[in-house]
Picture 1 (spheres, rainbow, N blue to C red):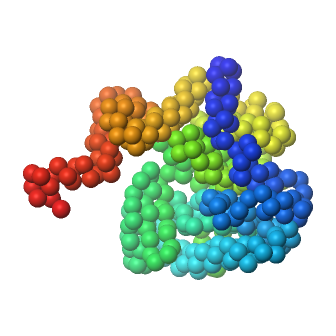
Picture 2: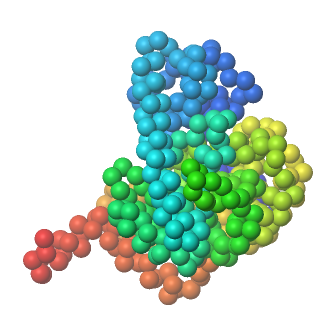
Picture 3: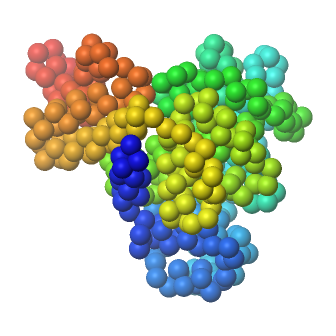
Length: 384
C-alpha cells in the first residue's frame, strides 16, 4: 500500500508542473522565510507581467503589497498599483453587499456560515489582505431554497446550480449558497462537526458563523488535492495557488490544535486527501508539517482506490477533450464514459451501470457544444 501511496504522491507532484515555472517561482517567494525586495525585482526581470495567468497576477499583487511595493521596478509600478486597486475595489464591492445579505438572513432566522475566501478573509484581516471574487455561504441542507428566495428578494438572480451549490448574481456581485462544504463529502454526507466547531461572529452588527481554524485547514487541503488533480486534465498549475497559500496561512497559526484537526480528518473519512496534500506541501517546502502529523493520518486500500478514481477521471477527461479537438468521436466517447464512471464513483460512491448511464446524454451533448443536437433538430423540426 505504501508503494501505491508513493505513486499517487508522485503523480500529483509531477502533474502540478511547477518546477522552473512562473507559478513555482512565485510560490517559492511566498513561502520564503523572509522576502527581500531584491527577490521581487529579480522576478520582474525574468517575467512579463502582461503574460501572467490570473492567479499568478493575484499572487504577485499580494507579494508587492507585503513589501509595500519595494522591489517593483519603476516602469512596472503603475500597472502593479492598478492591479492591486482592481482587487481592492472588487473586495470592497462584495464587502459592501455582504452586511445587507446577512441582515436579510438574520431577519428570516436562516443560519449562515461564511465559506471559502469570504471566511478566510475574516481570519486574514488585519494581518494580510485576502482577495475574493464570490461571497460563499453554507446553510443547513434543508434551507438552501429558502436562502435562494431571500437572495431573489434582494434582487439576485439564479445563475446556475452545480455540485451542491446555487450561484446567484446581481450586477458584479456573485453569491454562492452551498448545501455541502466539501464536494468529497458526497461520499459520506457532511458531518455536523462544521457547525459544532464554528464560531459566531458579527460583521457590522450582522450575525454569521465561520468554521474553526482546524476545519478551515481541512477544507482547504481537501479542495487543494482536487485542484491538484484537476491540473492533470487542464494542464494548468494555477488553479491550486490559493489553496496552497491559504493552507500555509493556517499551518502557521499558533492556535491550530493538531489533535483536534486529526480527529476531524478521521471523522470525515478523508484522511488520505489530507495526508497527500500535507505531504505534497512538505515535498515542495520541507518542514512545513511535522512527520508525526502525517503518521497520525491512516489510510486504507479503499481510500487509495477512491483517490485513484479522481486521478483516472481527470486523465480520461483530458483525453476526451483532446479527442474532441481532433474530431475523433470513438475515442471521445470511450474516454468520456471512463471519465463519467470514475467521477460518479468518486463523488457519488456509485458503482451501478444504471446510475452512471443516466449521465451519458450530457456526454453526447458536449461533443459539439450542443450544436450537433441543434443541427439535427433543425433538419427535422425547424429548430433555430
